[in-house]
Amino acid sequence: MSLHGRNVILGVSGSIAAYKVVQVARDLTQAGARVDVLMTEGATRFVTPLTFQTLTRRPVITDLWQDWSEDAQGHISLGEEAEVMLIAPASAQTIARLALGLSDDMVSLTALATYAPLVIAPAMNYHMWEHPATREHIRTLEERGATILSPGAGRLASGAVGEGRLAEAAAILGAVRWRLGRNRQLAGKRIVVTAGGTREPIDPVRYLSNGSSGRMGYALAQAAIDDGADVTLISANVELPAPWGTAVVPVITAAQMLEATSRACEQADALVMAAAVSDYTPASPSGQKIKKSGGGLSLDLVETADVLAGIDRPGLLKVGFAAETDNLRENARSKLTRKGLDLIVANDAVATIGAPDAALTLIRADGGIEELGQLPKNQAAERVVAALAALMQR
Ligand code: CTP
Image (cartoon, rainbow, N blue to C red):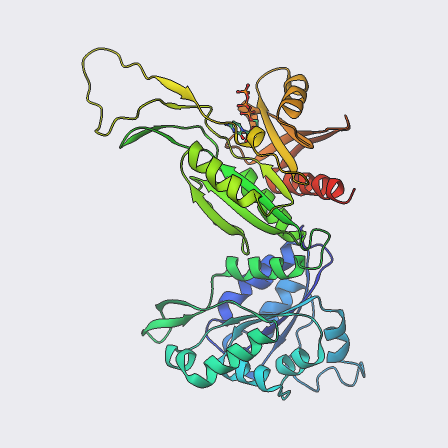
């Protein structure tokens, strides 16, 4: 429920892609947002207002004059309460209306009457998208601060192939979350999050690694975005989609993790080291695939550099994780001191690595302890980011 109590206006305009936005309205509502849907006349030809009304459990406004009799403020009051206005799909016609400041339907009129930032997800025929008129309108809207979710290339509803497909529902939701976070408590803070598990090559086709899925790191990145931070996500071998708005730096090995994290931390306010970094790497990986020799195989391993312990910049707040199988608090405390951390997140390695849930214990450098209990990783991540934000405010 990360969007609990947030006010979103969703303006739907006339494009076949309107059916995909039904999912967005549902996802926003399920995340806890209050979603007020406005539809152009064209949009109602593709999807009925009842569909949106049922999913958002709010009245849908389609007619400029519809609520005039009940509430003299009408559209103005909706616009005043909104924290973000999403326009999806945005047809060429609606984009032109927005750029020119026209107000002859509910969507364009509300966009004109609100101070809420606009997130615009265009969808149209590719000739229309490429037309100089549309390009100019898009530039104008960007200059005014709108976030544009560029349409993807692919097969369009007409059967033609080109640019014009509505962005994916997950990306639209991500952009709205990113935009809603911009004025939150971590606004202007730069946070580096590491995620996943490194791979240390044995030969060109084999490696040493661990079972980290990257879920915790990605959930931390999303929670930091939701709270307004600018997030760099150093991602080691993760299959998940990255949270919208993060700058992703893909790495494979512990050495690459060290390089990328050190560089990102030069400009950062905090480092959250959720990645499972390999402690050992083969001393001399083979250039060719190692063949079976009939006997056993011994690997000569050397220790990797400790990323977290090695990065030490004044003013950089450091959060580490301690994955333990025994003596959880004691081992975590000793890592906190050894690596010069402000906060350590301790967890049971066997129960947590690769799992959807986590039972975390937060231990601060000042000795404060918080037991979070068993939570889904996204909720656990929100609690870790809240603890981090509290430390940053000190
Ligand atoms: N870490 C790191 N670089 C490494 C190893 C670990 O930055 N080469 C970080 C991890 O990302 C984590 C913290 O250090 O935030 C603790 O990792 P963990 O694997 O629990 O501890 P280790 O330092 O490897 O110590 P041990 O093997 O004794 O448990």
